[in-house]
Length: 376
Image (cartoon, rainbow, N blue to C red; front, side, top):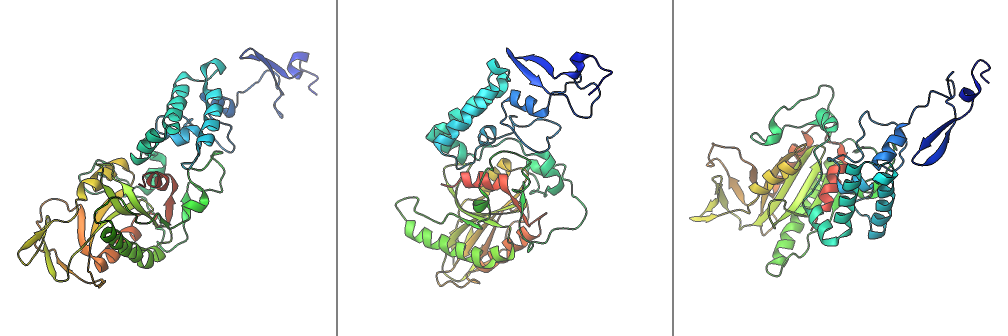
């Protein structure tokens, strides 16, 4: 085949690796095929504990970096069963074990991921903390939306030029399901990511459960009938655990890189004056549900998103324009983290907020998976 080369150069290269002999065939199209042995990216990833992958690799290996969640380390879906977690752990541990040429730090991350996910209580606490590593800068940079002023994510915001995606366009999944570039198990199945509504209001305690569920069901109906049809990529998640305390988030709507947190309350019809802290009507002061600290906590958890809060005040008779909320008396100082509106105002405001964001027709699959993990 190569008459001008010595015999050992024309033969497959023999390499001593981990106390085993491996035969590596010559690279086609290379003159010095026997001596020019190049270690593949797959071998490097295998030494780090990553299962075999297909497609192109990034410049920097990120399979077992600190920024990945436990599910990504083991390459299992967030809905993985105990058996699937054990199988994935055995595979990843075998590849990452130092005795097999793996990286000790990678093996520790694999072990930590397994110990957390295999224990039901620790896994539940991990899911409800929306735990994940730092946001992927490469993904966040082109679509980064300006968060509320004063938050940590508000610094160094870059806007991209070009045409904006219309909110009414068909959903685009990021990362795409059809690319196969990851080579691993998706965080959530395609069928689950394509659903627009996840979960329904349900009982959380003993007292006042029926009234709360009816109130939340009204909000769900408003969102599903008047907001979701206009934004096909919007995803409604009902019943989330608050990352700030033991309270709950009634509703969250994710579209692109914007997240709206929605709470609700029921008041008789009439005119209410909102001063930024309380609703005043007929000499009475009514404090709405505390949502501002939850919005700030979620903004810290998801720095790649623009997170806002809405408290919808509903009427007992179902009139979307009642009660009337007069907010001209609210203090002008400081940033209003949560808006207090009636049902009509909530529909109009949330739709405008989500549709005007960057890439509103994008379904951010990793963020959606983290939100679904936080459902109570």
